[in-house]
Image (cartoon, rainbow, N blue to C red):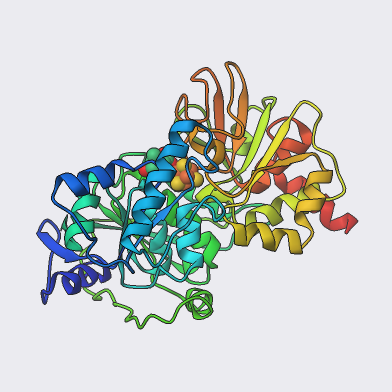
Length: 423
Ligand SMILES: CC(C)[C@H](C(=O)O)[C@@H](O)C(=O)O
Ligand code: SF4
């Protein structure tokens, strides 16, 4: 069995499960974001009165946060009321951040747990060795009532990643490269395990970035065997007892892919699809109207630091807007403490409060017809960040910052070398 199968078997009270089986599993935590008020209506329609465990459910206000419309303010109001009536132990209001970041920071995520959320990027939590997956309002209502949900045990694809990245190339480039090679339908309803010597030493932020985008290949969930960096990160945030499930040596992966990333250049997903990926050398250096650093993919302190290293003491191009939205209040405060915010504001960046912002085209920096945006986020289909007539390039935060500086798509490696020489 795979570690994922062992996690599901344990939650189903079975000795073993195998790909293709339908199992009914106990859920360890359920998160609902502010797009899914419908969950509450379904909960009542299905006869719900009290949720199965008030310590294992949380609302996160992040997609429409702070409320950009009266309707979303009404949604927040009704969700706050439900959370209060139910006595939820956790509640993440408009002053916290993006769900996947705040759940990890709050010590709610641990290896071996089953986490469901009303968000497709719940695959992010494979970074901690958790089984994280996105579900809809009706399934979520079932969970709120019963504390259980059915799953079809997924086949597992092994993606082995080896090699050391060169300066100016990041985890975001690695996952974009993989999606570009395997394509957006590579893992539909399957799990992806990321392993290899590149992954073994990877820090938590990079593990989250890679697992976050597994769903861009259709993956049901992602998995990385927890490493010391995960244990260190969790040690100061939670005290849940957990067991690390080991994958049997003779486990039979449905597919295996091996990537050597030691010679990888910065990668870009060019309009209009996440799997339309090219090395920066092969991408036209088009003018950039807007650059965005943020989201559950690229809004962590490491991402803001990458922008700081490139922009500190400089000014972004006069024809380019740079919007930076920390993925959480903890990240925001950390960046303030390190002086990154002041430096980046001086460089011409526009900050907004932690949340999803323009990532899915809700507010805080939408694009109009004909505009070109380079973004540290995870999707670039037409209309994702505003007008369907806009173009979105996905890239690493460093490439986003370098492009904001030059006003056109720019390779961060040159600027980083220069910044190092001048340091
Ligand atoms: C919540 C939902 C609207 C959506 C998702 O499920 O991923 C959003 O977060 C996104 O990134 O498109
Ligand atoms: S930051 Fe973007 S990708 Fe992440 S949950 Fe919000 S909308 Fe979805």
